[in-house]
Length: 446
Image 1: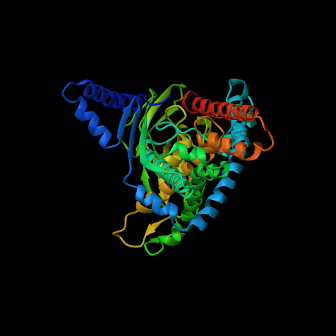
Image 2 (image 1 turned 45 degrees about the vertical axis):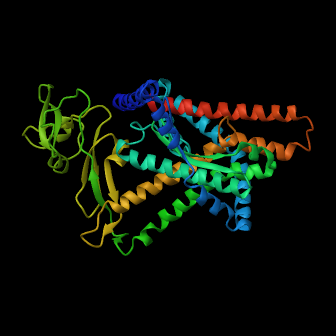
Image 3 (image 1 turned 180 degrees about the vertical axis):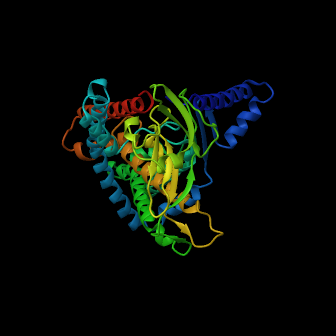
């Protein structure tokens, strides 16, 4: 389930913002000055939505859109081809993702637990999914929210820069650039003169509407290149290929009511359970490393009967789904981890970049690498999702322009063409909505 604390903070924060805005707009003394201030600064506030628009960057956009016109023409032609291919490919990708999600839901049903192959198949399907719904605090670690939102904002800005430059290249008036915050998600937008958009040809419209997802695709490719070349870029400052360095191990905290016989703040001891000669379950607190490394593997007390002295088989007393895991990385000593096996990736942070000098931070390569990975993932996802022929997404306008450019000479009746476009949009919208709904259920309700 979504963490209650996150919901409280988000809803509470937006309630304060909206009520403050409502009070100021209703005030006899502050109404006019407040509304003038909002208008002069390009701000608008509505429930769960703040929007800021400015014309400060117009000169820069016009400079970019009018420079090297022939090169930009070819650049956005490539983008147009990519956009059309991506629009039709999105149907296949969303359909495949939906089938994977449904198969995983069936594999996770109680009737499937009798088959171990179903479980492994479910895991395989989960790992192969290209698109997954991300919910902060559930399948997105809270300590990585900064990377996530920064990557979302950068991807959105690059997306809108593509639309803006392409529009100026096609002689469409550019009114301004803006940034918004919707609930907790940041984004960007460009304001174009609608009449100019309607007057240009369908092919010109295609170049503009495809430019956003084209720029996102290119940004993802540049991110992959940067990730591959990162060891070379940081070579003067960091060693690579000589091992890994553990940078952080998150503190483990017990969350349920299982037995805890050690100090809750202990970083070395773990509570173990065992059965004595009278088959009574007892608990004892032991140093985890000594208990693991100085004993043999056992399942019952009989496995430990080597002498006349009493020996007991001990089992870590841990909460549900939690394990005591030994991670080997020779020639160093084994690392011990307590937690959910799937969370090991997020709990233990490692890096292959080792500083050459003592004054260098071990966190810098990790920060850069993590941000670039998020940028690749989110920019690529923005390109895929926006290409879907769905109402209110770029795919809607890409589809309309594509049909105008290809079917106008074939189908003389515009009503028939519009009907074809409507059903395609309806299919894309239903497919996307089904993926999002089932994806949210898989993440939050299971």
